[in-house]
Image 1 (tube, rainbow over the protein chains, first blue to last red):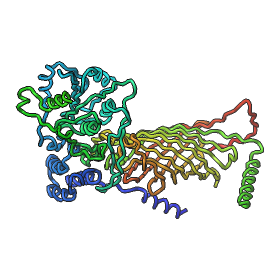
Image 2 (cartoon, helix red, strand yellow):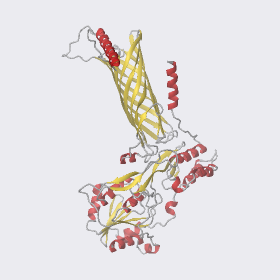
Image 3 (tube, each protein chain N blue to C red):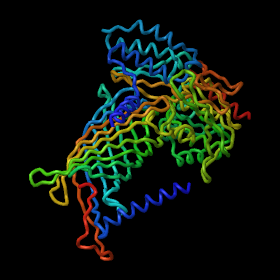
Image 4 (cartoon, rainbow over the protein chains, first blue to last red):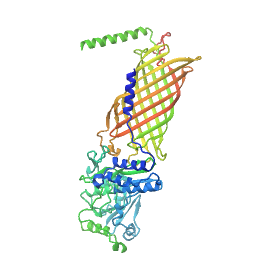
Length: 335
Length: 283
């Protein structure tokens, strides 16, 4: 009986696996943040970041009596080394953002120019979509965010509105993303068979190179009776096309009737995980890499179709013209 | 092989004859039903959701059915249990909330021995199906962590029947220890979205004490006023899993209170001898 008791005791302690703990002080919170990212962040190799060197660099700035705001600044600077728009630190007084992924590039979009000079404010709005028909008989829709989705019926109405148009422009400039589940219903209107749209993998352990084999993602065409679109399509993107919108562009680019015009997108192909520090601050970071249909990582952005890279001319904008939209209209008119 | 069959045959004959000896008049085996509620403290850590240890409160409902088994009611009892539990726990800084909701069902058989007057010991096995979900209110793409496990357990009890004045009381301690089984876990950084997409590799795992340790301890006192008793007690459950570099720990300590009731189902089709012995499952 005594032996059984000892065996149970040993097994109990052997089975209670340790969970690393950090003190709720500047050093403990800094170490927690560094470790969470060290074990879960997914793009160290692609971005050439030596995370141990980053620790050496920033841990020196941690002092035991530093204020919360000073700690936040050091931690924000540290995670900015990842150059990742999906990686943020959230404290009660601020959320950190790495902004250079878009601020170092021309904006290439002025909503007012299109609303005023192309539609004279005569366009329809539905959720986060503005749409109308251009004088060249080309349907135009600007999808502002995939945070809010269009219902299947909404998409039917929009495509029915464009039924007599010769082509369609889907403008996802300044679309900062949202949910992938809002991308799929739209893409399904442009495919006629089960289509490979990309791959997804995940970390299988805390090591920087521990990843699962990429798993295929397929989309099915919209069910029978739904409005479909088989005519030419131009997708317009800019650097602020990010995350789920980046995925939309990457997916559409591989469809035969689709051309991508504008600038390279902002990337953001790592689906973010959330975690937290002992002090209660939240941290979000890229954790699950997604690849396009050719197995290419789109974290650094999706380039326009060859020969279709266009920047918006400030002079054109002053004159009420959108250089990129004009390029798209001309491209579709000629083709 | 022949020898083994012979031994089994003899054992079966002995068991049957012993049962027959005792049951020259068919005994009555009342059903003991238990309805209890629990409240107490809960601690949850799930490194898929957060590296921090959460703590808070839990509440649970419990239904149990226990009965002496007809083939040898003096020696064997069966126990059927259902539980539903809700936990609400907070992060150390109290700005983040996690919920757990779970149900489990368990069926077991135990052999019992009366080792002294009023003292019964029992040992046996049970099988349990656990389903639940931990949900972090602050997380975006990884808000939930599912729990699904099927286990085969070692269990038993020690029951002591005594009187306080004229009031019969039954004090019972029952531990349950899963020994083997299978359980679900996503991979280290796997999104449930990937599971939805069909990435099912590596989700089911054989459970053993190296990766899945759980132990339940229940101590109850039944104050037997009549066929209905008042049950008060304490329940503690510890779960610790470690698989795919994900560590999960759940621990609850709670007070138990509720009612038990013993009843016999009588049927006009079956005649019962007025001198039938009544063999209780626990008392």
